[in-house]
Every structure is written in structure tokens, then in C-alpha cells.
Image (cartoon, rainbow, N blue to C red):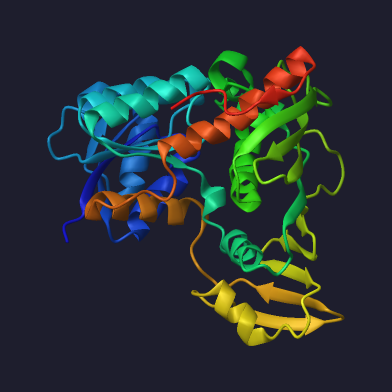
Length: 359
């Protein structure tokens, strides 16, 4: 099988992980890179052995030897670069969030459909072994029907210092699209949607700006209702001083699953639950360890690639083998919709029905 040939557009901070992921995958090679800052593009090219450097992505897209592009640009440039890539008949991998607005996201999906090219959003939260293991245990009936979910991403993020490191676009409304919920919460809403096992139907939210004097929200609290009746509370913050919190718990009528780092814990009322049953539900790759104490099962994740490395590999393989993408442009749009719906709820002081965009 021939490897796909890729152009990376945008050579800022996040691109380093993408270049590394392309080196790790067996399905693709980076043959060109582009950045408005030529010195930055050449630095990445030299570090990762990329033969061709550009400062204009339209020139890069003229190359016949490029099958796909990996967009690592500021959020407001995702849509225009994707439109140009679709017109050039290049498959597109774009960093999260898919775009700054739902209108742009919808146009990206339609442009790639019309061009007959694949569009994948780098939602690295999807490529979590513990998330998928939890979903399989829940779908196996071990906690009964889902009832409620609590999902936190609490941190103290110095966005002012970050902006001073040539990333001022990250705290501007027009260039970033939003604050904590838009930039970091986009990971969480995608994982939350997957964990809930159903599409969201309504959101109610509030937001606020604390600690950091910026025009965007530094904290957001949202309540989602899903089509299966499950409710979820999501809290994302850049202004939570102290230890922080990444608590994630999925509750059901007969138990709960708690996700934390590289492990999950299962509380189940099912009598006679055995290790073999859990291993069968979790599947492959098998857990590193599995133990039980005081009625609680602890499942340790194996050492497998996740995050951006797994996302790039999945995209490259899907393009090389012409198979379905694990995370589509529509998935990226639906995740953004959960964020934009929350913003509208906070602004209008009412619940917002989902979906907002008809496809």
C-alpha cells in the first residue's frame, strides 16, 4: 500500500505534535509545509525532514504530489484553508475546533462533500482507550440505563502569558471564536456526546470571565439533555485557582463509571460479575491490569497511542485505504454546535434546542 503524501499548513505550537505523529504513522509522509512566517516553516522542515517550504498555502495546494493537508492554523483560518483545499481536491485534516462559527463549519462540510474529499477534525479526546472502554462497559448493561453525567475540566491557565508568545489570536473573539468552552471545552463536548451514547437535544448554560482580563469567557457551566433522557453537567474553566479537577463520572440506574487519567473504575450492582466478563466487553487492546476491591472494579489502560498521534494515524489510514473516518466533519460540526448552543443560552437566558444546523 502506497503512503499518502501530505502538506502541513500552519507551523505554530500545535504543529510540532502533528509533525511527530506523521513521522510515527506508516500511512503517510509530509512532503511540504507552509506558514506565513517563513523562518518558522523552515525550522519545522529542518527538524522533521520536510523537503518543500511555502509561505502561501495556495501555492502548496498547487502541488500534484499532495493527497491531503493537515491544517494547524489559528481557528479563524480553518475555513478559508479548507475551502481552498477542497477546490484543489485534497483531503483535509483540521485541528479542533472545526471552525469559529457554525456557518463556516457547515460550508466546510458541504465543500468537501461536493469535492468528493474526506474531512476529519482532530478531536483527540475521541482517541482515548478509557473512554471507549467505558462506553463498551456501559453498552454491555453494567450500569443500567444512563441517567446523568458530570464532566469537569478545571484549570488555571495563564492565557495572558500564552498570548504574549506570538499567540494573541487565542484570546480574540474574531480569531479564536470563543474562550475556555470553545478552545478546550470542544474536546470535552465531543467526549461527552460519545459517553452519553445519544445526540444532545437541549442545552442551558452560563459563562463568566474571572482572573484573566480578556474579552472571552474563562469559565462555562452547561447542562445538556440527550435524546436517551440522560442529563449531563459540563464545567470548563481557565480560572480555577488551586489543584484543578478533571473528574468524569457516568451514572446509571444500576451503577457508575468513573474516568480518571489512564484508568477507569466501575461500580456495578450486577451480581456475580467476573473478570472474564469485563475483559470480554472491553475487548482489544486488553487492559494493562484489572482488579476488584470493595465491590469496585479498577481497569488500567494499556500503553497505546492516543491523542494527536492516534488521530493522524486514523486519518492517514482512512485516506490511504479509502475507508470511513472515525471522526467526520459532521462530528466536528455537532461538537461545535454544543458549544455555540451553550453561548446562545447564556446570551439569551433560555434553553437552546439542538441541533441548530440541519444537514
